[in-house]
Image (cartoon, rainbow, N blue to C red; front, side, top):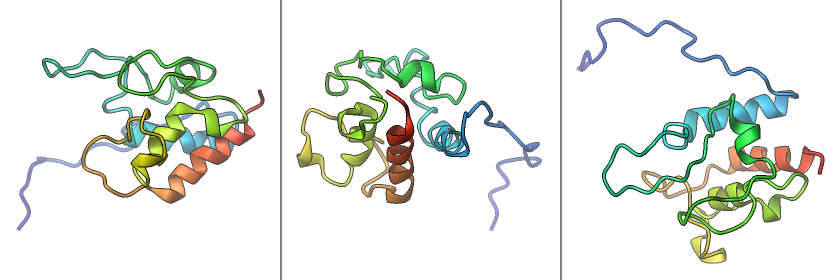
Length: 136
């Protein structure tokens, strides 16, 4: 039986992701907007004592907030969020991969932190390809 939480369907599109320099970059922006930006959006935490990095993964802030930007929180390993051309040094990608093997790099906090126990391989691979394609 339907719970009828909504009185009417939301008007589509709720958010149109634009601004990617390539179709791959637009796809990465869409994925991170839909799956990460609900927490990583530059806003102060709503829960007392919660620690969220001041990381903004909304599609219109993604590049400025990640590419060649050092991590700024105790929530993850020290390093650069996205290193153009080098996914092995990109902390954001390492955090996404840590779901599959948390022991591989114990300094990186696996992301997402809750509700997921398997890595989204297809989309993590997509983010890795995007990082490889970025010019250093």
